[in-house]
Length: 289
Image 1 (cartoon, rainbow, N blue to C red):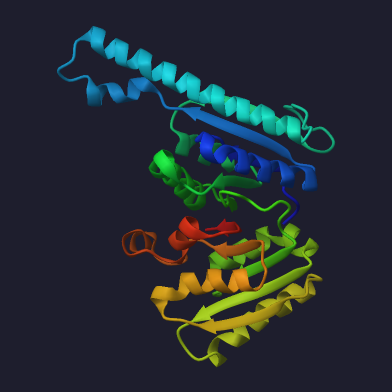
Image 2 (image 1 turned 180 degrees about the vertical axis):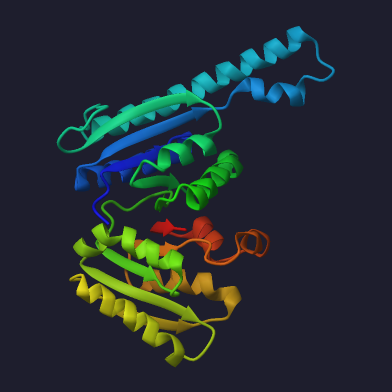
């Protein structure tokens, strides 16, 4: 894959906005990208069927007005965060291609997950923060929608992202189609990384898994990328924790991995590597489904 020329950043919760915008603009500066910050306001009218029964028209109108005022205040806070980040990175506003880094602000009303998926399909990368706080449930809904249906890679940023990142890259390799897609999308990072480590966690003896990890290393070598391999053993219930431990031990500041390589329903009910990484990864993660 070529470099990330267009980057989409859903901007919602003020608590995670700064780190996510900084990460996106850092990449934008590195790859001469156009960074679009997207803020989606919830339409208060959509809640009327849920709250309107038993209430007078005047009360419903008042509730809608209050919700609109809250949405406007939230949007203004998000816009201020965007402008502050744009100023820090000296990113000019643009709506058409220009040389180098540029930025754009989009503020609209609708369903966030739908708008992120729609606009994400025409972006090279979607950048999100870890879902947390009061916004955890809607943020997780948006993140899963982006991962599963946008058809683009997603960069998940830690709460306090190290800047810069991508110097040392770890690849979580299990031979799946999702992991293969993640490697392909990560090529701009892998080609510039100082170190690349292939991580594989297995329940069984190392011999049966070391060869596939070696095959990925051989594939990367054909692309001019030197990678080492690290195969470790852990029960399924501890695979995710072991993966993050090995990534940290290797000194990685970016983890590349396939997302929801097993049944998403099974992972949502029982947990899984993807959900564990989304909840707890201390470094940036480039994920692809």
